[in-house]
Length: 416
Image 1: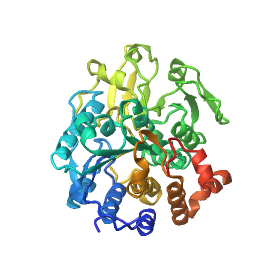
Image 2: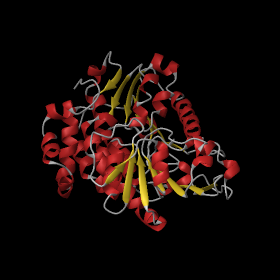
Image 3: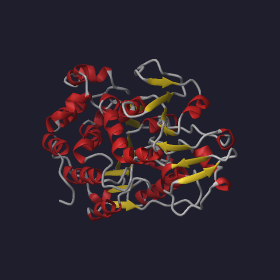
Image 4: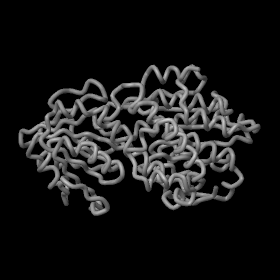
């Protein structure tokens, strides 16, 4: 074994043994190349997938180099990330890498091949070639909200909406906010901010607010002004971007879309540090694309801290080149035992496709992650990490014992 075994994955393997050969299945995937991801792919190979039928690329900002090389040792086709010389073009570069990966996959497909797209951000789903859709059975899995927002571009085949599963919505935000605090806590402490702003008040944004509110003065703003679904005592809620920009010296973006504009270079009147906590990799793109003439220091690497001098002689710092900041080169952004619940959900979505393939026939668009599998993964995680129960309400803990409750709290069409 090259990677650590995790209880959730091991129990899924035990409970979902099958006699069906999987050598006609192919996986094409974009994932964070972290140690626990390696554990998941090694488990998938043990489940029955041929390693040379797996095509994988990582994200530049989250790839752990040693892990990437170990995944290659498994026999998986790992495509190295390209590097753009231009600011704000990471999404374009990633999309081009994914298109190359599709070309590599297409060369080895057989007439009876079936393709599972295991995606993070929607780029693999979005770029699925038409000729592949016309020839082969294609199934998708999307784990991010930003990827789901691209759904209109890939409605020609079924896609399991992992991001709208009850587990992702109700269990994972606490894990993500903890990861941000683990990875960025000291960095933020060293900045000595008076006020921290969080833009985006979805599940992740709220979790970040809760994580930092006892240590700093917090301001929050939601671009859709959907703030009344959970007001937290002691947090100031703003009603515009200008309002929050005027009040904070650290701004965390958690929207999954571009919240910036070139006007910030003339409008911002205080020193501010910008941090992206979004899986969409685009929080500050408009600013980045226009920032080069205003950089105080030249760019050495894509993940440099950028310093922009404003027209008001203030400094805008952007951590990690504007890309997601809660990955800092460590093997995992969260402890493996914690993040194994996410790896288990991804694995369970693949199990759902393999075990219930006939139920996907003539189904298109958003498919619900099986409540039965969600229940299973959550139970295994709580069994392995019983101390985590204190992080969730009795309603949530008991809810995950009921398939009907999970179904009610999950998005997508229920088919199994």
